[in-house]
Image 1 (cartoon, rainbow, N blue to C red):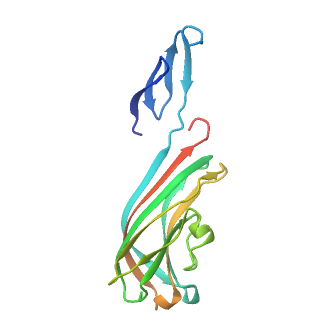
Image 2 (cartoon, rainbow, N blue to C red):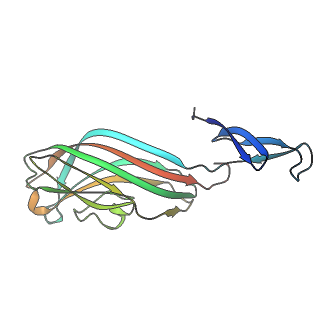
Image 3 (cartoon, one colour):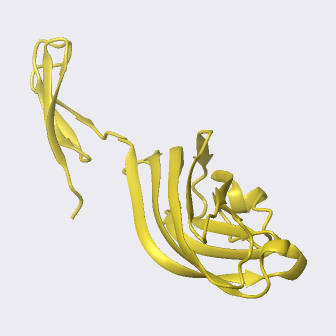
Length: 192
């Protein structure tokens, strides 16, 4: 059951009470509306999706394409959505011996990475950001920089993507990661 916040909004001298996240109803008098009229408002409040996870990911060595790893973060429904922002805080706590490089790239996009470049749809929400490794450990933060309007035709899945340059990987390996991902959006569809 979704959490709701009980609240009151005062506009001039008109008081509106209700639960945020659901319909708000009030009887209005002396406000320019007919006495006893009921106005219903469906607030499109920003929603926050947060994913906190610790995992071990397999980094696939793609030879000249470098090493890549991906994990599905979340899927937004097929409705019109205005994405206000996204944030990723990721820490790498260990790497296997096949990973010899000291830099790992991270990004968030609408497609799983296929090369270590991490561009285009592999990084169309949060652009590629470098994580510098010291003794196999490192951390970094990344954030989106633009507001995105998603149409309502299809679901959209977002992926955490990692990339390691070809010179920094000698075969399929693993990375241990811990991350927090937040996505803030407004569902613009009617009845959302």
